[in-house]
Each structure stands twice: as C-alpha cells, then as structure tokens.
Amino acid sequence: MADNQVIDAIGKSLDRLPADIPLYKRLKLAIEEAIQTQAFQSGSVLPGERVIATSFSLSRVTVRKALALLEEEGLLNRRHGFKTEIGSRVEKSLSTLTSFSEDIRARGQVPGCIWISKQMTRASSTEMMALGIAGNANVIRMKRVRTANGLPIALETSIIPVRFIPSPDVIGQSLYEVLEARGFMPERAIQRMRSRAATAEDADHLHCEAGSPLLVTERRCYLADGQTVELCETRYKGDVYDFVFELQR
Image (cartoon, rainbow, N blue to C red; front, side):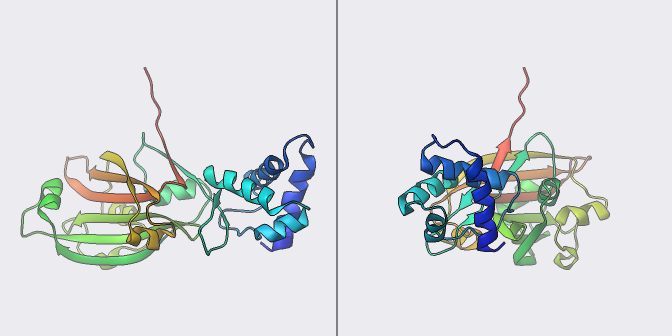
C-alpha cells in the first residue's frame, strides 16, 4: 500500500478519537484501529517517522513513543536498518493437532515455506530413540522457514522415518498433505515447549535480532497404532505467535 493510503487510513482513525487523549496514545490507537479493521494488512510497510510526524503535525518523539507501544504489543515489527512492517500475530491452540499450513489458512493468510535443506540421512542416537527406529535406518530430514503472507515466522526441523516417506522429493509446501495422501496422517502428539534466545542463524532466517525471544516446541507425532511418524522442532518468533490453552476444572 502506498504511503498516502496508509496515512489516509491512520488519519481517519485519528479524527474519530477524543482530543483529550495524549497525542502519542491517540496516534497509537489510530494505527491500531487501522490494523484491526484491516485498512492495511500484515506485511504492509508503514511510512517513516518523519513522514508520519509531518502528515499529522506531530513531533518525532510523539511518533516514536506510539510506534514503541505498538511494537511491544506485537502489532509492528521494527528492526534497525529495516522498514517498519505491520505485524501478524498468530494464535495456536494446543488442544488440537493441526499443521502450520492449517493454522495459517484458518486466519485468512497464505502459508508458505523457504527450504533450507531437505535430504535423506542417518538419524542421531536421540532421534533413533524418539522415532523407535534401528541404527541403520534412514530418515528424511527437513529444515525450512515457515511463512505467513510471505513473512517468516517460524524455523522448523522435521525428521520422518523413510518407511513413511521414501524420498524428500515428494514433499512440497505441506508435509501433512503428503502424509495424509500416503495414509500416515498423525492422530495424536506429545509436545514440549520452552523459551530460548535467537542465535545468529535463527535471526538471519527469521529477520529478527540475535537474542530475541523465541518459543520452541518439540513434538512427537503418532499414528493410531502408536508408531512415531514425525519428530519436529519449531522455533517461533515470540513477537508474532501466541499459544492458547483451554483449561477446565
């Protein structure tokens, strides 16, 4: 979206807000309202601080404070030396077993991936135990960046025994679509979650700062007969992914 369209969308929201609210909060609320009403979508680029300040006769300090609040709430993605983008938080329920592609499509976004590697190889001793395979058995090892509307939000490594998928070449955008077509769709999973800081490699793939918080899940997926079909580690950007738990007494 062009700068003038973005400014127009923010201005319309700004005009509707009470004048007694501090300027930086009014600007923050105006941008937030424009995002929530989908005046511009995730991945859209905001004009620079100078353009916003000039357009609404505000100081750069006021604009900076408003953008900082939006960044804290995950509505904006800012990185030194890069443009400010509209964020895209994704909610992931932990009560159901769904694929990344299903989660993203359910939110009206387009899932995608950027392949880092996809190969047949031997499993490590830890992977052999987790997958219940012999030491001489091969696995398909896949590493890729997962995207939503073209924006990187997760770094995923999956390991699948070759008895379920004989070649990495049959895997396109969605692993689960291939597993379902072959009759090996996971029925249940055990998942562990932890936090960690992004490494330099993580930061490069996910377009974030090294040291930024990541949410890391380690998941084992099982078939109905108890066979382990997939071992997966996913590193999610902490500023775009929310995990939702439903608790009952």
